[in-house]
Length: 355
Image (cartoon, rainbow, N blue to C red; front, side, top):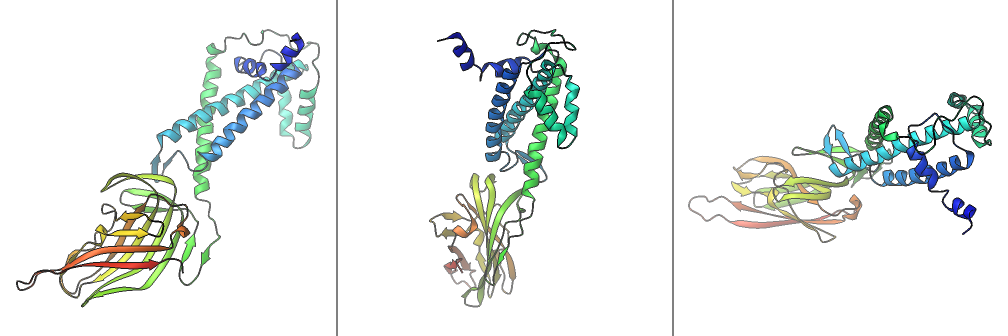
């Protein structure tokens, strides 16, 4: 291969290597060709970082203080991306200063960037200019051989840039969660929202991406003088997978179903709807989350009226409208009176969520 061909074939990689080695170096120059090859490398690298950000951190923050949330894997990824972003920023800035030196201009020429419109054009023209004989700026450093590992100030700058980028990216992602979306859909039977809210579930504060509420005012089930009423069912879609501890151990969910039930005890009975099951139209058989549901039932004396929420953790859910039917089952037993044996009964309610 001709030497000139070999040199040009490596242009896309060598400037990046030299740029990293000279990341903390300002007192030298950089010719036009190597500068623009370096800029191309940095654009490609930052494009990859941006795509990664859009599909990870900017989808959901790595950590939050209120409500408390911490994802170790995302935090590590956040700081890796921030470190690389801070590094490319420093490499790009110092390379631009050295390119200006190569055109016999000081790095202070970059102050022109503060002048809207004209300023950036002047800087771009200068960066595109050919090399000039060094009059004001002498080359006191051989590019690529600077002991950059010993530059304490440079490493401190990189550390501060990493922390600043990490804070910015995470804060931007957190702020995006709370931007209201006013595209509401409502009718007489159901209501959906996409405004970010937090659902308190036990000690957990779960971020909700969207929800679908289904009033079910006619779901009354009678057992003699006793009445069970399911007056509302709400389907929640979480922001990404959420891990929480339940009575069945640690589980990862993508949604929740909340069933609100009222009970009128026409006679003394024992019932635990929070130990019931719910079968969805997509075949998921869910046990009620006893540890996080309301404690509103149990042993009820005659004449007691009580109500509460029963939560079901949904492992698989793309959007709330995917659930169109739910079959809720629970048991109850009349308490023994005058030596009679208690009578147990299985109850079920089929909830049509498509209307």
